[in-house]
Structures are given as structure tokens and as C-alpha cells.
Image (cartoon, rainbow over all chains, first blue to last red):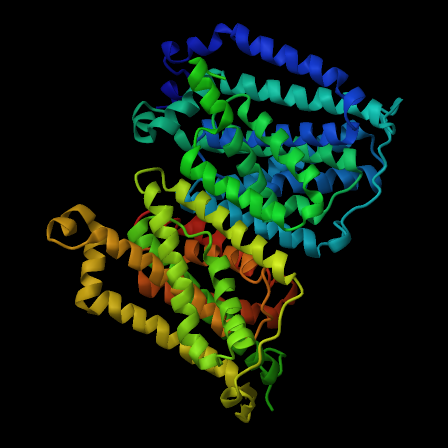
Length: 326
Length: 295
């Protein structure tokens, strides 16, 4: 069993290793160009928020779209990492890259602990278990000393990258955030299109068959869970540096719901869907912020309509039209 | 008076009673989830919102129409259940052929809509609901003071839980229901209208949530978020108990409420998370849940 486990059949992953299709290369390049000049056009903090959520949604999509696992508690890693990174910056006085790193690592460890338990159940139970553990993290953030309870951790200093380059100015920080989130999204792309990603898809499509082929399914599930939690943590830790704040909003269950919404709206299991979904949801929240609870109602309506009529998401539908994976 | 493990009995009994009351809500709500899950195979994420809806309908009946608590106890579950029938007919029915996760996502969206609407119109501060005259006051039991209403909540929940158990496990209607859970196609072939039965079952499960909401209205303030956090705890209760058995849902609900109450006495800081910790332990030892049949 272990021999086949470490050496999967070569033909299974050959298509994946042929590199990125031209279309995807072109889209990523165009995205990079747009993002490079974006701070001239829009408020940089808003653009950074969109990028952080795009990475968060893409990390979540790794788990749902390619692992077939619906986690309803991804706020725990996003918010948990933002608390740890904010604490490192503010109390320990660490530079931003180290703070983000330690926040990301913390999310990975949390993901390992929760994932190891959650993968013991499947389907809707898996969703409920992850939600319940995330609520436990929420209560911890509410009560623990270092998280500051209702206040959160405020006025986190941005400091200097590597202790050399100050990133206090939004414009300087913007390019750091761009590098982190774009790098994270490319890493996710690489993971999905690796032999590991192919095995994941096989498990998603037919778990008993993957087991019978000799794959240790639970080990793959746990790995993808930890990877997804870690990258969600990277997004959360980066966000804490942008807003100089870690708060209960980021660990609340509604945040877990939002990332599901972003992914569903853009297209589950697509490469670019979560990025588009995150952009739409964050923009909507930005423009409708004055409408208070109506934002929740609108999100609910999108959920209901999305599930009933539009399960493939925007990019999913587009991909069908163009007959190309996007 | 004697002390138990360094805790005065008044404190211990007081927290046990509070635990029993929370347990009553856990039991009624997880029972509703189990009934719905049994036949529809979906997790009703809007259960918390429907519980809140029950409390609000009771409040509205009193405020706008002057209808008393006792009538509300009957009417509010019917009204909330009726909204459930509409939801099943218009939306949920279209998802049965899909992955069960879509049912979860749809009902999550419905919960957001209901909670958002009520937050919009009634704010989040909460509205008061008077305890009915017949149940105000309390009994001095010698070792503790028992408010009448709280005693009533426990009694009413136990009666409803066991009534539901009796109908499902011991009557002909329940037999149809259990048969449809096992094999809906075959039951349909015997001439039973299975889609109607599914619709009514969802309505009944939702009505249970509404009933719990009316019971809760005089104890907790009626506010749009009252069900949101509660439902997550109930999910943990359901994972611990497993949804295979009706009695399992009832016993786990009351049992965990009591354990939570005891934790408040002996280790107050842990009381918010004790149910999640128990869930973690159960997942390690018996992943399918205490009363679960399959994982």
C-alpha cells in the first residue's frame, strides 16, 4: 500500500505537469499589470482588502473545489492568524514579514489540530464539526487575555520590511501585499495542478476508488486541509498588517459564511472564480456599508439564488461558454 | 447546609437548573434537526433563525394582536412551520437530487435573510416578553428557589420531546416516516405521497424550532441574533449524539445542558467551550457519535 501511496501511476498526473496553459498565463499577466497600476485608480487600502480576501477565497477553494470538503469554519484560520500576527507586531515589535510568517504558521498548526479531528467525519458532519471548532476559537478570542476581547488588537504598527524598508505608507505596503497575495495564489495554482492536486481530484470524484487504488485518502485530506488553513492564515495575517487591527469580526462564523459566498459566487473549483467572487463581495460591502443589515439580507439572497439557479458561479458559466477551464 | 466539593448546594442546584433549561432547548432543537435530517438528508442551517422567528411571532402576536402566551405557544409554531412548508415547496425540493451540502448552503442563506430582515426592523437590543401571570413567582424547594416559568420550560420540553419520540417510534404515521427514511421509492410505490410527507416533516421540524423560540421568549430577550450562536452549539450536540436516533438527540441535548451547567460551577471559564471539547473527544473515540449508526 505504501509503495503505491508514494508513487502514483505516472499517467494520472502527466497532463498536470505540462505547465500553465497560455490562456491562464495571459490572465495572470493581465491581472498583474492591472494590480500594479491599481493604487493610482482606487484607494490602496481597499485594493489591499480585495487582494487579501481573494487569497482567502482561493485558499478556501483549494479545500472545497479540489478537495471536495466544505469547511464552515475557515474564519478560525483567517482570524486566528490575524490575531497572532497583530500580537507579534505590536507586543513583540517584530517586522511585518516575521509577523505574517508566525501568524501563517499558527494558522497551519490550528488547521492541523482541527483538521485531524474533522476529517474523521464526512459531508455535512464535516461542515458542522469545522463550524463548531471555529466557534470554539471565537470564544477563545473573546475571552483570552492577548486578543483584547471586544476591542481586539488595535493600532498595530506596520514597521519596516526586514527592518530596512518602512511600509507605513499605503503605497509601499500595497506592493508588499501584492507580492504576498499574488505569490500565494500562484502557489495555490501550482498545488492544484500538481500530482498531489490530481490525487485530490480523484478522491473528490470517487473516494472508494481512490482508496482501492492504494491512496491513503485521509492523509491527502489532512494535507489539503492544512495547506488551505495555512494560506487562509497568510491572507488573515496580511490583512492585520493592512488594517493595523485584529478583531472578532475576522473569527466570527459570518466570516466563514462570507468566504463560502465568495467562492460560490465566483465558481467553486475554478482558478479565477474565488478572485472574482471576493472582488464582488468586498466591493458590494464597501458600497453598501451604509445600508447596515441589508448587506446581510443581500448576501443571503445571493446565497439562495446561487444555490438554486447558479451553482457553477460566474467563472464556471463563462468557462462553459468558452469551453476552456478557467 | 452541607457542601458538595466545596460548592454550596444552592449554587450547584441553581446552575444545574440553568443547565437543564439550556439542555431543554438543545434537546428540542437537535430533535428538530434530527427529524429533518432523517427524511430530507439536509442539515437545516436556518433552524436557529426559525427558533428566533418563533420568539418574534409570539412577541408580535402579543404586541399587535393582544394574543396571550398560551395561544402563542400553539399559534407561533404553526405559523413558523407554515413558513417552513413554503420554503420546502419553493426551494429545498429542487435540491434533493444534488449533493446534500447545497441544502446546507441554501438554508444558511435563508438564515442570513431572516436574521438580516429582523435586525433591520427591530434592531439588536432585544424586546421584552412578559412571563405569563399563571407562571410568575416560584417555589421554595428548601434547598433552592425554583422559578415557576423555568420549571415549566423543562416540563414542556420533556413532554414535546417524548411526544415526538412516541409518534415517530410507536404510531403508524411514524412507521411510514421511518420506512420513507429507509427507502422512499418503495414507500411511494405503496401509494403513500412521499413528497407531501417530506414537506410536512420539514414543516414539523421547523415548528419544533418555533416552539422552542416561544418557550425562550420570556427567559431570553427576543432579539434577531438569539438563534445564531445557539444553533452552532446545537450542531455540536448533534455531532456528539449522532443523528441516527430520535431518543439519542433528546438524551444528548439534556445531558450536555447539564454538563454545561456543572462546568459553570466548577470551572466557569470553560463553560462556553465544554460542549466543543466533548465533541472533540467523541470524534476521537467514536467518530460516528454516541447514538450514531454510520459515519
